[in-house]
Image (tube, rainbow, N blue to C red; front, side, top):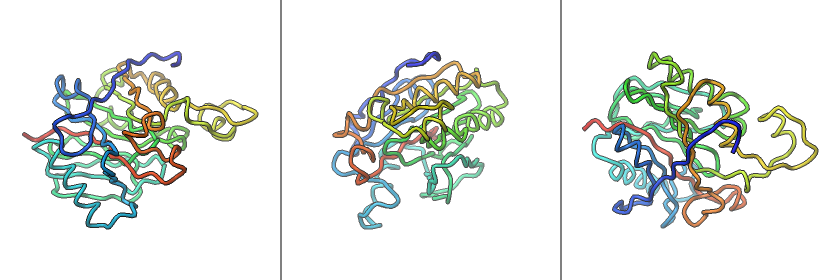
Length: 255
């Protein structure tokens, strides 16, 4: 993968769920955290800009909240801009909270489910379980180049009062390096090196390197690829821009 090491942790299909979703079993069994991503089976599109009727999309969001676990009263998601804006959520709420312009979320509250929409970009899960500090980031190449992961790690560490070595990080389901070809201007922005033409970019490996530079030691990566496994997940690139959206989610149930 890269000079920085990361363990593979594949999200497992939740077989008993009424909706398609995949979760990190270890985070649940070891830390009591619910961390996962929805799938595309049955056309389960959760995109805020979905062409489906608004009522249908909101019903799917309600299904998600009901299916994930007891103990979640609220879900927060943002109208994402492929930027680096991260918001702290310090207050309890009920229902679905939609924040404008947010690509990342942090909370220390139980019962709040953090969510980001994805369809090739990397959902980055951050956690310091001992202080109940959680962060969830939506990171595409613009976010990577802009320091989204570095900022997220810093914000989580600041809230938890710990060093990066105490933080867990997982890079979730996204497009893999074999399927993600970008132009030389993107490589220059993300990796800081010049190339002469279109080049494959392994965004998860780049984020692992960035996390290691920050001092994060416990990093895992999914080996699912939205393009390779298009029957399971939406891929913006593989569909020519016609795909729907999954939701990556992270939270600690209140019960």
